[in-house]
Image (tube, rainbow, N blue to C red):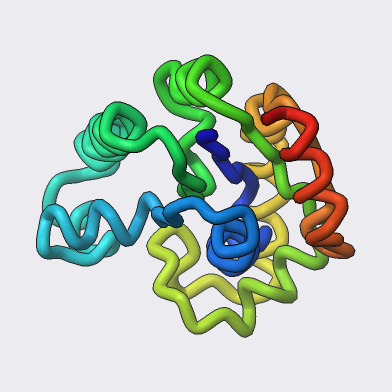
Length: 169
């Protein structure tokens, strides 16, 4: 079974994904970490050195490689992955997609205190981040909502998601 976790940055895709993959007995791959390892670089450097358009091409190619090499895997995607190219269709055609939905105020709180390097929010104040997140979330949510399932990333219930995936399997 292939499972894809989608959602905005800081929605919990990586942290929930690691725990969920372990519980359902599949390999866990964080798409950003995969690209960093493959290109021996950070996401920040990939974007800085290659530009956003090339970064999104690398992301799409990496997603395709992971899908083609793995049948039993849980993939934590980047926040923008579903928004670009036909990635959301590819994921829906290749497995079970789950949107971890979190409201913007909670996302902003998480992003303000997150230690992860997030290139799209470098140097933003809380106010700037709120405006930015509202705008970006507004653009991307229509693609997140194309996921086969939507669950709360704020009040996440692991067993409920496991039960949902068992029905899919």
